[in-house]
Image 1 (cartoon, rainbow, N blue to C red):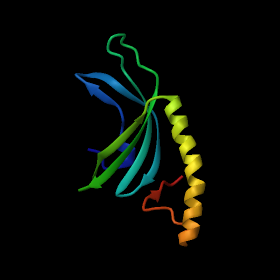
Image 2: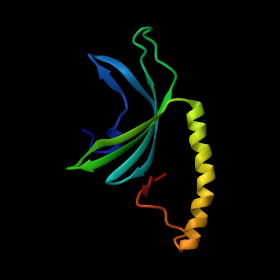
Image 3: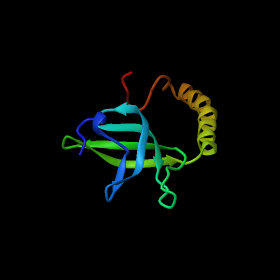
Image 4: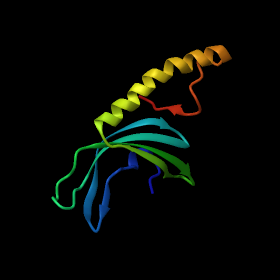
Length: 116
């Protein structure tokens, strides 16, 4: 089990064969609840080659000194990623307007931002 975010990996092996390999990662939030994004590829067992890259957003909870995966979401295509980004672009102005009405402007939620 990983005690630090640097120790976490999205690589996965079965019977000594790497079937999922991490290409890149970004830490979005740190702390007791950490959120990371992983760029990864999965092995096509028929061809023996790695498929097109995907993105995973993974939430970890630190408990008893180690991080454990709590949940994850895979973004499997560029189309899906662009749809998600489009929804964010539409919703954030609405969220700001609602926060101003309620007097909550400036709140960023309960996640601690990742250090740069």
